[in-house]
Image 1 (tube, rainbow, N blue to C red):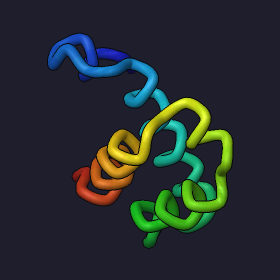
Image 2 (image 1 turned 30 degrees about the horizontal axis):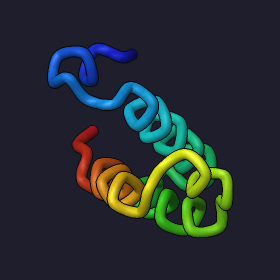
Image 3 (image 1 turned 45 degrees about the vertical axis):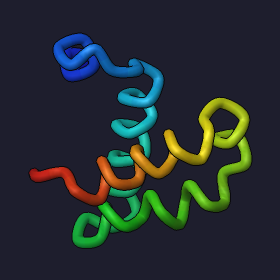
Image 4 (image 1 turned 135 degrees about the vertical axis):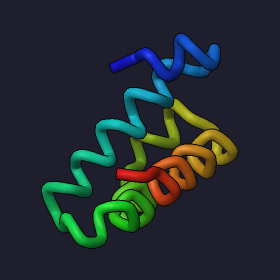
Length: 68
């Protein structure tokens, strides 16, 4: 699962978080799962403890822009 972060030398915690929220979104709505991250992340105060707003924005964009 962590192959992307290792290949591109990216933050593994961000990669794990993106994957987690992506699959959490799938459990809510398969059709709109990309957009679920926005709503979930806005209400998750723990996210802001571990990531700055720039990192959260990158993660939101990664979830929204991914291709199945």
